[in-house]
Length: 393
Ligand code: 13P
Ligand code: SF4
Image (tube, rainbow, N blue to C red):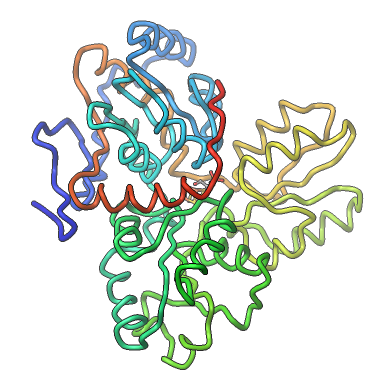
């Protein structure tokens, strides 16, 4: 089976393999033996399998991973840093990506064919990435470009399927992450008059607003409504068309939570991720990517107080790492990325056990034209941002 961008399965299918265009996100249940292992047994076994696989293996861990998995990562980072590390690795056979599906796809696209990228649980997707599919984007393009005649550049957050990245690459656009969205929008405005930004309306709005584009020049394109709910006049007036998608974790933060924090203790600084709504970002003292949040807390003076609007595992790790500072979540409720959480020590051990036995499970592969065009979009992004140093997490 081949999709319209030429994506097809590699010739040697692996157990539970997920291929773009033939996305098979069913995670088979693990063998019973994993259910009876204690946490300590699992930790010892993971460390042992890592030793056995040696330099053939690299484990990457996103900052939102639970600690019991994160501690086994050879490299940790946000989505940009991990994508760059994946691209720079040499002599590695297997990358076990403790993150979500779109991150593993990006790592596969950026690495050579002889590197196999493995996602420990195929159910680790991203609800935001699922809010934009290729058919919807093609329909949007037909309306905005073919019917309205707009000169628009498609920019996709890396939190998107490879087919969406490929569409952007094939139509003069690029990818971005939360740490380089401003730079990429600046680049895009040199290529065309308007931008369609997907799938996260909030990152798009927050970034464009910070560049000085007023809210009146931004319109929301709703892929579930005919013509996105827009008229040709609205498309012509707009500078930025924002795809109606969001992160279900960061959307849980509200301006009322900011007000509560300020009322309770005005000396607490509010620091949020730009996937939060515009209202929350406007209410915060600072907004920035995952790496920006970590750097800000790390460099803050002892005794400083922080309420942070991002995923709870990262916030809890910062709380533990900097006991001389007060670090708490902006929300009273647990803002947890449930799909990231699916990657647990059991699944990590399972994929490593299989590798030690010479079997590859849960390989994530992007092939054909999808790979070529998505790589173009990722490379346009990487060409516009400085290379990050590779550091052991
Ligand atoms: P970054 O890792 O780019 O900050 O994005 C956060 C996120 O939501 C990852 O899915
Ligand atoms: Fe997707 Fe949000 Fe989870 Fe990131 S935190 S993986 S954007 S659902």
